[in-house]
Image 1 (cartoon, one colour):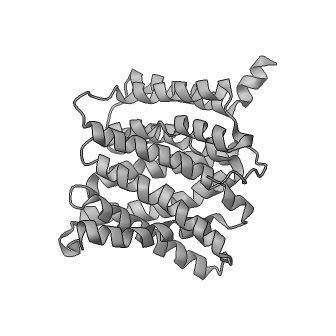
Image 2: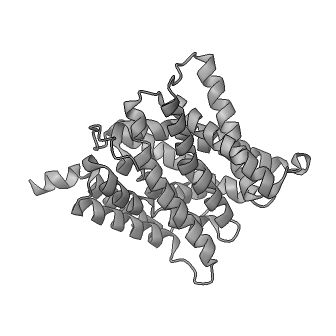
Image 3: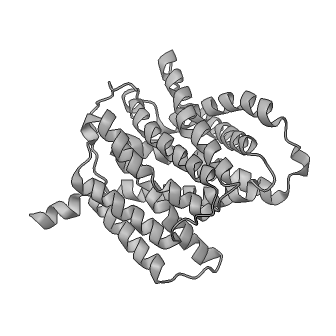
Length: 306
Protein backbone atom coordinates (compact mmCIF):
# COMPACT_ATOMS: atom_id res chain seq x y z
CA UNK A 1 0.00 0.00 0.00
CA UNK A 2 1.41 3.35 -1.04
CA UNK A 3 1.49 5.72 1.92
CA UNK A 4 2.59 8.77 -0.06
CA UNK A 5 -0.94 10.16 -0.24
CA UNK A 6 -0.77 12.35 2.83
CA UNK A 7 -2.59 15.22 1.19
CA UNK A 8 -4.28 17.33 3.85
CA UNK A 9 -8.02 16.86 3.86
CA UNK A 10 -10.87 18.23 5.93
CA UNK A 11 -12.05 15.11 7.76
CA UNK A 12 -15.12 16.77 9.31
CA UNK A 13 -18.54 16.48 7.72
CA UNK A 14 -20.61 19.50 6.76
CA UNK A 15 -24.32 19.54 5.89
CA UNK A 16 -23.69 18.86 2.18
CA UNK A 17 -21.44 15.87 2.96
CA UNK A 18 -24.03 14.40 5.34
CA UNK A 19 -26.75 14.89 2.72
CA UNK A 20 -24.66 13.08 0.07
CA UNK A 21 -23.90 10.31 2.57
CA UNK A 22 -27.62 9.78 3.28
CA UNK A 23 -28.46 9.65 -0.44
CA UNK A 24 -25.59 7.19 -0.98
CA UNK A 25 -26.90 5.00 1.85
CA UNK A 26 -30.34 4.87 0.19
CA UNK A 27 -28.81 3.90 -3.17
CA UNK A 28 -26.63 1.22 -1.61
CA UNK A 29 -29.42 0.04 0.69
CA UNK A 30 -31.46 -0.71 -2.42
CA UNK A 31 -28.59 -2.74 -3.90
CA UNK A 32 -29.16 -5.58 -1.38
CA UNK A 33 -32.76 -5.85 -2.57
CA UNK A 34 -31.83 -5.71 -6.27
CA UNK A 35 -29.16 -8.39 -5.80
CA UNK A 36 -31.65 -10.51 -3.87
CA UNK A 37 -33.95 -10.48 -6.91
CA UNK A 38 -31.22 -11.10 -9.51
CA UNK A 39 -29.46 -13.91 -7.63
CA UNK A 40 -32.50 -16.15 -8.07
CA UNK A 41 -31.85 -16.35 -11.83
CA UNK A 42 -28.21 -15.40 -12.44
CA UNK A 43 -24.83 -16.50 -11.08
CA UNK A 44 -22.65 -14.13 -8.99
CA UNK A 45 -19.97 -13.18 -11.55
CA UNK A 46 -22.62 -12.61 -14.22
CA UNK A 47 -24.57 -10.23 -11.96
CA UNK A 48 -21.47 -8.26 -11.02
CA UNK A 49 -20.23 -8.05 -14.63
CA UNK A 50 -23.59 -6.78 -15.91
CA UNK A 51 -23.78 -4.35 -12.99
CA UNK A 52 -20.42 -2.66 -13.60
CA UNK A 53 -20.67 -2.97 -17.39
CA UNK A 54 -24.00 -1.12 -17.67
CA UNK A 55 -22.80 1.46 -15.14
CA UNK A 56 -19.65 2.06 -17.20
CA UNK A 57 -21.65 2.62 -20.40
CA UNK A 58 -23.99 5.08 -18.66
CA UNK A 59 -21.13 7.07 -17.12
CA UNK A 60 -19.11 7.29 -20.36
CA UNK A 61 -22.19 8.54 -22.23
CA UNK A 62 -22.42 11.44 -19.76
CA UNK A 63 -18.67 12.12 -19.85
CA UNK A 64 -18.51 12.29 -23.65
CA UNK A 65 -21.77 14.26 -23.87
CA UNK A 66 -20.31 16.98 -21.64
CA UNK A 67 -16.77 16.65 -23.09
CA UNK A 68 -15.15 16.13 -19.69
CA UNK A 69 -11.33 15.92 -19.56
CA UNK A 70 -9.80 12.46 -19.15
CA UNK A 71 -6.59 11.41 -17.36
CA UNK A 72 -3.59 11.64 -19.69
CA UNK A 73 -1.02 9.58 -17.77
CA UNK A 74 -0.74 5.81 -17.49
CA UNK A 75 -0.36 5.92 -13.69
CA UNK A 76 -3.89 7.30 -13.30
CA UNK A 77 -5.40 4.52 -15.44
CA UNK A 78 -3.46 1.87 -13.51
CA UNK A 79 -4.78 3.33 -10.24
CA UNK A 80 -8.35 3.22 -11.59
CA UNK A 81 -7.89 -0.43 -12.56
CA UNK A 82 -6.69 -1.28 -9.04
CA UNK A 83 -9.60 0.71 -7.58
CA UNK A 84 -12.01 -1.31 -9.73
CA UNK A 85 -10.49 -4.51 -8.34
CA UNK A 86 -10.66 -3.34 -4.70
CA UNK A 87 -13.98 -1.51 -4.79
CA UNK A 88 -15.97 -3.60 -7.28
CA UNK A 89 -14.60 -6.95 -8.44
CA UNK A 90 -13.68 -8.46 -5.07
CA UNK A 91 -16.39 -7.04 -2.74
CA UNK A 92 -19.29 -7.20 -5.22
CA UNK A 93 -18.54 -10.83 -6.05
CA UNK A 94 -18.17 -11.82 -2.39
CA UNK A 95 -21.44 -10.08 -1.44
CA UNK A 96 -23.44 -11.56 -4.31
CA UNK A 97 -22.07 -15.04 -3.60
CA UNK A 98 -22.82 -14.60 0.11
CA UNK A 99 -26.41 -13.58 -0.60
CA UNK A 100 -27.03 -16.93 -2.26
CA UNK A 101 -26.79 -18.51 1.21
CA UNK A 102 -27.79 -15.77 3.67
CA UNK A 103 -30.64 -13.20 3.69
CA UNK A 104 -30.18 -9.59 2.58
CA UNK A 105 -30.80 -8.33 6.13
CA UNK A 106 -27.95 -10.37 7.55
CA UNK A 107 -25.69 -9.31 4.66
CA UNK A 108 -26.38 -5.66 5.46
CA UNK A 109 -25.54 -6.26 9.15
CA UNK A 110 -22.19 -7.77 8.26
CA UNK A 111 -21.63 -5.00 5.71
CA UNK A 112 -22.05 -2.49 8.54
CA UNK A 113 -18.70 -3.65 10.00
CA UNK A 114 -16.96 -1.68 7.23
CA UNK A 115 -16.34 1.42 9.42
CA UNK A 116 -14.67 -0.81 12.04
CA UNK A 117 -12.19 -2.03 9.44
CA UNK A 118 -12.06 1.46 7.94
CA UNK A 119 -10.91 3.06 11.19
CA UNK A 120 -8.19 0.42 11.60
CA UNK A 121 -6.93 0.59 8.00
CA UNK A 122 -7.06 4.40 7.84
CA UNK A 123 -5.18 4.65 11.15
CA UNK A 124 -2.40 2.47 9.76
CA UNK A 125 -2.07 4.07 6.32
CA UNK A 126 -3.41 7.65 6.60
CA UNK A 127 -1.59 9.90 9.09
CA UNK A 128 -4.34 12.56 8.93
CA UNK A 129 -7.14 10.07 9.74
CA UNK A 130 -5.85 8.50 12.94
CA UNK A 131 -8.42 6.83 15.16
CA UNK A 132 -9.46 8.56 18.36
CA UNK A 133 -11.15 6.96 21.36
CA UNK A 134 -14.34 8.89 20.56
CA UNK A 135 -14.31 7.69 16.95
CA UNK A 136 -13.71 4.05 17.95
CA UNK A 137 -16.50 4.19 20.54
CA UNK A 138 -18.81 5.77 17.95
CA UNK A 139 -18.23 2.94 15.47
CA UNK A 140 -18.95 0.31 18.13
CA UNK A 141 -22.14 2.08 19.30
CA UNK A 142 -23.31 2.39 15.70
CA UNK A 143 -22.69 -1.28 15.00
CA UNK A 144 -24.61 -2.27 18.16
CA UNK A 145 -27.49 -0.19 16.80
CA UNK A 146 -27.40 -2.13 13.52
CA UNK A 147 -27.45 -5.48 15.35
CA UNK A 148 -30.32 -4.28 17.54
CA UNK A 149 -32.41 -3.40 14.48
CA UNK A 150 -31.93 -6.76 12.74
CA UNK A 151 -31.15 -9.11 15.61
CA UNK A 152 -28.10 -11.31 16.09
CA UNK A 153 -27.09 -13.61 13.22
CA UNK A 154 -28.61 -17.08 13.42
CA UNK A 155 -26.01 -19.73 14.26
CA UNK A 156 -27.45 -21.91 11.47
CA UNK A 157 -26.56 -19.41 8.76
CA UNK A 158 -23.79 -20.39 6.35
CA UNK A 159 -20.47 -19.51 8.01
CA UNK A 160 -18.50 -19.17 4.75
CA UNK A 161 -21.13 -16.83 3.32
CA UNK A 162 -20.86 -14.59 6.39
CA UNK A 163 -17.08 -14.71 6.12
CA UNK A 164 -17.35 -13.66 2.46
CA UNK A 165 -19.34 -10.54 3.40
CA UNK A 166 -16.74 -9.66 6.05
CA UNK A 167 -14.03 -10.12 3.42
CA UNK A 168 -15.90 -7.64 1.22
CA UNK A 169 -16.04 -5.07 4.03
CA UNK A 170 -12.29 -5.34 4.62
CA UNK A 171 -11.69 -4.81 0.91
CA UNK A 172 -13.96 -1.74 0.96
CA UNK A 173 -11.82 -0.32 3.78
CA UNK A 174 -8.64 -0.70 1.70
CA UNK A 175 -10.44 0.78 -1.33
CA UNK A 176 -11.42 3.87 0.66
CA UNK A 177 -7.80 4.43 1.67
CA UNK A 178 -6.42 3.70 -1.82
CA UNK A 179 -8.98 6.05 -3.40
CA UNK A 180 -7.59 9.04 -1.52
CA UNK A 181 -4.87 9.36 -4.21
CA UNK A 182 -7.42 10.49 -6.80
CA UNK A 183 -7.71 13.84 -5.01
CA UNK A 184 -4.08 14.63 -5.91
CA UNK A 185 -4.71 13.60 -9.53
CA UNK A 186 -7.50 16.20 -9.91
CA UNK A 187 -9.79 13.74 -11.72
CA UNK A 188 -13.52 14.66 -11.64
CA UNK A 189 -15.57 12.22 -9.50
CA UNK A 190 -17.67 11.07 -12.48
CA UNK A 191 -14.52 10.26 -14.48
CA UNK A 192 -13.04 8.41 -11.50
CA UNK A 193 -16.27 6.43 -11.13
CA UNK A 194 -16.32 5.60 -14.85
CA UNK A 195 -12.66 4.55 -14.86
CA UNK A 196 -13.19 2.35 -11.82
CA UNK A 197 -16.21 0.43 -13.14
CA UNK A 198 -14.62 0.17 -16.59
CA UNK A 199 -11.52 -1.38 -15.05
CA UNK A 200 -13.73 -3.74 -13.07
CA UNK A 201 -15.62 -4.73 -16.23
CA UNK A 202 -12.40 -5.48 -18.15
CA UNK A 203 -11.19 -7.67 -15.28
CA UNK A 204 -14.51 -9.47 -14.88
CA UNK A 205 -15.41 -10.35 -18.48
CA UNK A 206 -12.77 -13.10 -18.94
CA UNK A 207 -13.21 -14.36 -15.36
CA UNK A 208 -16.99 -14.59 -15.78
CA UNK A 209 -16.70 -16.34 -19.16
CA UNK A 210 -14.26 -18.94 -17.82
CA UNK A 211 -16.17 -19.67 -14.59
CA UNK A 212 -19.84 -19.23 -15.57
CA UNK A 213 -19.93 -19.07 -19.37
CA UNK A 214 -22.35 -16.89 -21.36
CA UNK A 215 -25.73 -16.37 -19.64
CA UNK A 216 -28.99 -17.12 -21.48
CA UNK A 217 -30.16 -13.51 -21.62
CA UNK A 218 -33.52 -14.16 -23.36
CA UNK A 219 -34.77 -16.31 -20.47
CA UNK A 220 -34.11 -13.64 -17.83
CA UNK A 221 -37.38 -12.30 -16.40
CA UNK A 222 -38.44 -8.65 -16.61
CA UNK A 223 -38.18 -8.36 -12.82
CA UNK A 224 -34.52 -9.42 -12.94
CA UNK A 225 -33.74 -7.03 -15.81
CA UNK A 226 -35.35 -4.14 -13.93
CA UNK A 227 -33.32 -5.04 -10.84
CA UNK A 228 -30.10 -5.20 -12.88
CA UNK A 229 -30.80 -1.81 -14.49
CA UNK A 230 -31.57 -0.19 -11.13
CA UNK A 231 -28.52 -1.90 -9.61
CA UNK A 232 -26.30 -0.60 -12.43
CA UNK A 233 -27.60 2.94 -12.90
CA UNK A 234 -28.69 3.92 -9.39
CA UNK A 235 -26.75 1.73 -6.95
CA UNK A 236 -23.53 1.85 -9.01
CA UNK A 237 -23.23 4.72 -11.53
CA UNK A 238 -24.91 7.47 -9.49
CA UNK A 239 -23.72 6.00 -6.18
CA UNK A 240 -20.05 6.05 -7.16
CA UNK A 241 -20.20 9.66 -8.31
CA UNK A 242 -21.33 10.49 -4.77
CA UNK A 243 -18.77 8.06 -3.31
CA UNK A 244 -15.78 9.80 -4.90
CA UNK A 245 -17.15 13.26 -4.15
CA UNK A 246 -17.49 12.42 -0.44
CA UNK A 247 -14.07 10.73 -0.42
CA UNK A 248 -12.51 13.86 -1.94
CA UNK A 249 -14.16 16.22 0.55
CA UNK A 250 -14.43 14.26 3.81
CA UNK A 251 -11.90 11.42 3.78
CA UNK A 252 -11.93 7.64 3.84
CA UNK A 253 -13.13 7.10 7.42
CA UNK A 254 -16.15 9.40 7.09
CA UNK A 255 -17.06 7.88 3.73
CA UNK A 256 -17.32 4.37 5.19
CA UNK A 257 -19.93 5.58 7.70
CA UNK A 258 -22.42 5.05 4.88
CA UNK A 259 -22.52 1.34 5.75
CA UNK A 260 -24.00 2.18 9.16
CA UNK A 261 -26.74 4.17 7.42
CA UNK A 262 -27.53 1.50 4.81
CA UNK A 263 -29.51 -0.72 7.26
CA UNK A 264 -31.47 2.35 8.40
CA UNK A 265 -32.35 3.08 4.77
CA UNK A 266 -33.37 -0.54 4.22
CA UNK A 267 -35.65 -0.52 7.30
CA UNK A 268 -37.28 2.82 6.39
CA UNK A 269 -37.74 1.91 2.71
CA UNK A 270 -39.37 -1.36 3.77
CA UNK A 271 -41.74 0.51 6.07
CA UNK A 272 -42.63 3.14 3.44
CA UNK A 273 -43.03 0.93 0.36
CA UNK A 274 -43.47 -2.65 1.57
CA UNK A 275 -45.80 -1.99 4.53
CA UNK A 276 -43.28 -3.47 6.94
CA UNK A 277 -43.88 -2.47 10.57
CA UNK A 278 -41.40 -0.59 12.72
CA UNK A 279 -41.09 -1.64 16.35
CA UNK A 280 -39.25 -0.18 19.34
CA UNK A 281 -36.00 -2.04 18.56
CA UNK A 282 -35.80 -0.29 15.19
CA UNK A 283 -36.13 3.15 16.76
CA UNK A 284 -33.64 2.36 19.54
CA UNK A 285 -31.23 0.95 16.95
CA UNK A 286 -31.52 4.07 14.81
CA UNK A 287 -30.95 6.24 17.88
CA UNK A 288 -27.76 4.33 18.70
CA UNK A 289 -26.56 4.71 15.12
CA UNK A 290 -27.23 8.45 15.32
CA UNK A 291 -25.24 8.66 18.57
CA UNK A 292 -22.42 6.62 17.04
CA UNK A 293 -22.29 8.81 13.94
CA UNK A 294 -22.24 11.98 16.03
CA UNK A 295 -19.34 10.55 18.07
CA UNK A 296 -17.38 9.72 14.92
CA UNK A 297 -18.06 13.20 13.53
CA UNK A 298 -16.99 14.58 16.92
CA UNK A 299 -18.10 18.20 16.64
CA UNK A 300 -21.14 17.94 18.93
CA UNK A 301 -19.19 16.11 21.66
CA UNK A 302 -16.33 18.63 21.49
CA UNK A 303 -18.86 21.41 22.13
CA UNK A 304 -20.36 19.48 25.07
CA UNK A 305 -16.91 19.08 26.70
CA UNK A 306 -16.18 22.80 26.49
